[in-house]
Image (cartoon, rainbow, N blue to C red; front, top):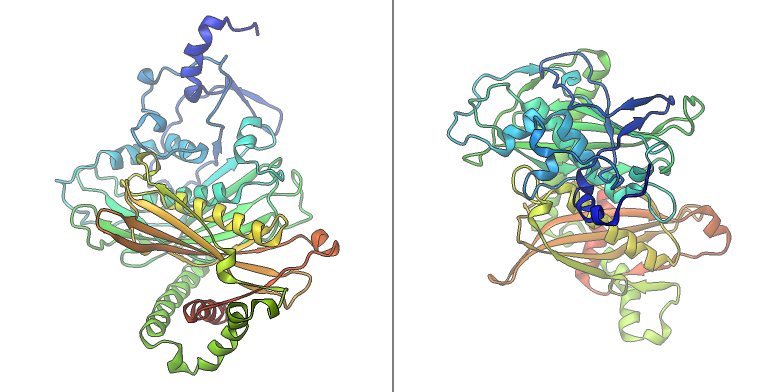
Length: 478
């Protein structure tokens, strides 16, 4: 291909975000021409949908730009203020008829009155990242150590879960007003193995349990060691997202479509989902009692004093303090931002995956500064989305190393707490929107070279209570 004349370069650069590759090459070696917008599958179809292929959001400035006005559907990137990424773009192209209705909902329509019964298969959606062949996509997800950026992956998991929830709640009736679906919680996610950025990755999920107005979605992240390899388990991570449905006009809880499992495996998932729902309710009750009664009611005074003993030495006799320990307050990091319209979701609120992404990046930085060596992500604990975050909110993320677990010298654990505060300077108020708990470890090579992890101690009773609450929650809900 010849060189582009300099005078044409600015015009082409203006279109760089809207240029698809001229062709797409798949792992089999076949090259297909650029596809026209994919046809939509009926929502009631029981046939499994083919995986959605993610492509990079950037392409060569020499490629032919897309004429957006000639497209049947407006690209997601042209909807004002919509948060978009390679995954959200791919989901948009695959299910645009549903999302376009959500972007321009009819609030005057009646609520859904006739509820459908759907199978998990009807909501199942898969996304394939062709990292092995798409260089630009690979660069968008690569971290400095040639692994997949976990923060961006958390964003994508939330986006996929939201799409699956929308698919299950769709009633195929354009006259009814759509439901408002919000992320209520995310269960603990444990990363079983590192994710390489040069091998294809797949995330897939479906609705596994439904209550009156809540939906649980299971998502699996898989990556094979090598193509067609059966030697190792490809499963890298399993996530459970819980969404709640609200009436888009009244804001009250709204019922959702029913779920009918068709296989023994789906029936097992349904029972497990019901058990997890009961566990979540139990956890909320325990946390409420702990908040109202305090630890002293349960005889935790001795534990508090024991935790605070070493911290008092740091405060009163710093020259005699243990050099292998550090105060929680000395591990703190913080950042802040103004929530922009480009970060909002389909319902005008800040995209939950964006919050998880920012919290993870701060947690990683906190662990990195504390350890003095690149940390390895291990798990993110249960997350409750307590309060919505709106466009224009002043959001502050505060992090610290809450405690360390050094019992296993081959795999020490660093527990990071990240709290998101919604601050409104005009009203002089600050409320906690989310609290995230991330756990990191370090590589065995670093430990063999003599890397030591320090103990972390609280200096105040409030810090000691937070540590005890997290330790007790880990034991109770392990």
